[in-house]
Length: 336
Image (cartoon, rainbow, N blue to C red; front, side, top):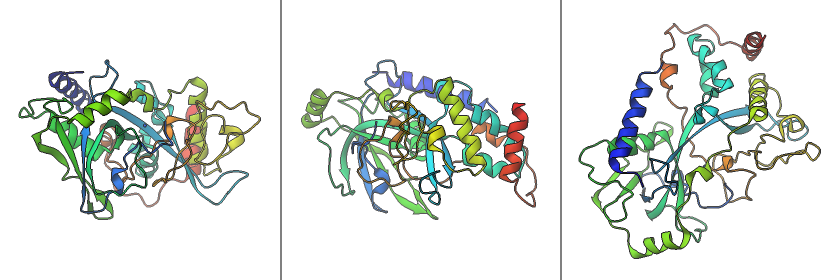
């Protein structure tokens, strides 16, 4: 388990780097905190990652959402969305982001760039010690998984830099609970009043027994599989098809990534371990999808620009937005 000093040092290094640059799934182990009633709260106790090489007690996940107006040969009038991993999560160059970064210098293409910009979330694990959420069923293993949005993550990580924080909050003896509080700001859920509990709390015997019985999770197990060259090529072709407004084609892409509820084509030699399905925004308990990528994700407003997006040159509002055909033509011209 990393010390609080190690976590602070790595958080500081990440912040410096950022400012200088221009979660298997069909079970109900995920605690859907975004479904708690407005004006209520949920108290969580985070636990360490079982991976001894992970400095933090969370893992960052970066996903790209590709939308299509329907499925070819299926329901062609029902829009679908697929989440695919962004390889910048592993420090590699993402072809989609290499393509869209220049779009932020053109006000007619900026909105389209935001649509395809990677969405971050953070995978934690721990106990739910109090909640106003009425769950239909509670898993036997009380060690739950949490998919935390950037808004809540910022509160969690910023507080760890406070020198008044004496112990790492995952410490079994002197750790601290985290309270998620839900309100509404405009049309979106707001969690800005969430915070760490005021007092330290030792894990009780029931919690300790649960850890001894079930063991801690290795959070890497709940990240998507890193795409190989073949899958990366499929991601970019799906991106082009999405920009062009084409229907999702299971025969072409089904062996790589699929919308929730779409089966792999029988004749493609599909690779189940690599196929990623995307559940609806507010999922009900459902059969396990093909890969960990399909974990539920908290509904959230469009994220603020990443640092490199914010450096795009300011420009007056354009009279119109670039068409999908114009953007697709620009993509293809760049590839020639």
